[in-house]
Length: 424
Image (cartoon, rainbow, N blue to C red; front, side):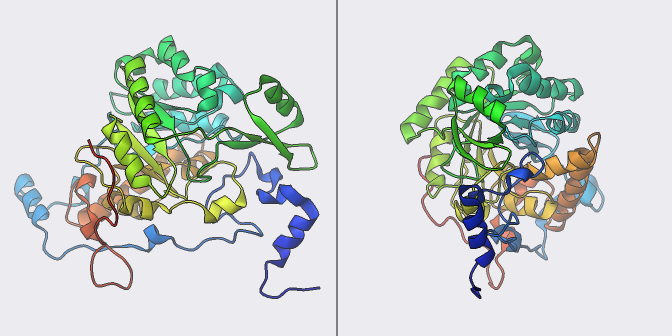
């Protein structure tokens, strides 16, 4: 029997494997990273999304270039673009940060330590994802990355931000790190931060998920901190699920107040999934005093996620940025399929302060554990300088929506489409 025009292969795969087919192949766990456009029988590779489809359009008349010419006493070039950026209370050499990799096997081992070391040398902030401590342990994984970053960091740029989820709170991750002598140099120099994780782009509305072997499943089940779900492979691998947490506007306000009161020397960040009320959510966080708000678009995600989520749940990053009204001086961080300067420049023009490297960073350090991330960042920074200069500007923060034109239109991108919610 055949079924032309119908996803026959995907249906047959489900008939053979059942619930295991809801996820990418279990054998790819630990060696693959996942997000929108992931190849599979139920999720064909996606084409360009809305953010990539936008065109950066330089003007003919450039008053800022004239100002720069007068300042320098010569014609300015792309090397005169200053990429230094203030990101969530940290000084950063670039409008970039290292995104959280989560507690997946691919993002928890030697590659994560190599990425931390290179991020420290680059002088960009690094985020360490949720569930590291309850799954892998405090010193062997989380602290190893903090120490690698700190040892490599030069000058006063950069910083380390550590997420905390419901399961992390039970392990008192923030308390452990805040009082640890190993983090004292970061804390006392204002380069330590904590991020309240409310969601993630790969699976909005769900908590973290990984695949664990039989022995680890038994250990985690005994600890009682995670839900162990279906078997996903012939080797007995099980789905490990964390809870997503429950949030309202008042809960977010109280959580951020708690963070500021209990950890006064740490920067306060909050990360949202790409929900339909993202404008109101970001406004609530800024009004409550968050130093940075991270929005993870539906394209984002290095971790394990159901196929139905990878291409069909949550707002794309461009849609999120179009409905967020960032107050003057606030930090808005954007992640989701970032790897080159064009996409980064479009996100900055839509209001982001900086963009995060997740899957791209892991692939770069996998290619070269010593310098891969540095070279990737070098290429991205050059593209940013070229693009920003071509638009007649000399700082990332000078980009705006007037620099972006949707395809097939005769006008720049429209202003905010909906009210953004509370503002400070």
